[in-house]
Length: 269
Ligand code: THU
Image (cartoon, rainbow, N blue to C red; front, side):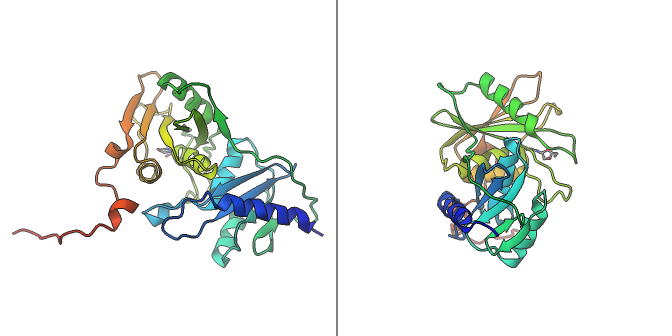
């Protein structure tokens, strides 16, 4: 029998976390709380995008954050709102070790004694602005968490705020490939899930390529969440390269410009 007061408390935490969701398109804030076996817990929020298929679902934000703390001992998932049928299926597919749907917003391990300990926020502080040298060192360190069963191509990233906080990300791969999240988006998911909206720069480290740049999907998500940010790209021994996010995605499709009416395109002779 599940101790309902524990689950109710976690439901409350999940609902509070949902306030941090980025949902300008649906206006339906969503968060997922991942409860680890020792009672530590971590929240992830839904992060929408003008390109709808690039949405980062709340559970994916939470799971990536858990992996970035070196934790995968998931005992339960609590949602801020009831799961739709299709969503329930995805949740059950996404979590290892296996959990079962016990209620419409609660997926767990039958017979497990749940408890609540500490929230893992993943936010790290430094005492002064992060310079390129430090940023790249931290992005390289984040790459240690990468899960690259499919590509053997680890990437690390950090998202840095204007008040000296940073959030780590790494590419976390899944056998089905559709649920892989790149390092840059993992770092953004961690930052937004922690309520941060002032990402100033993103450092990306990719030591297995001499020419890598952020992928198109990451550019689109970065443009949506931090259009004025800069991206530092580390490829090992060569000097890092710096880009402005807006330069990486000229004529971007975004919340601001998608509703702008355009004059009809005329095809010339
Ligand atoms: N990857 C990133 O993490 N960031 C990028 O900008 C490019 C690609 C990851 C995705 C996948 O896990 C692996 O690199 C191979 O493409």
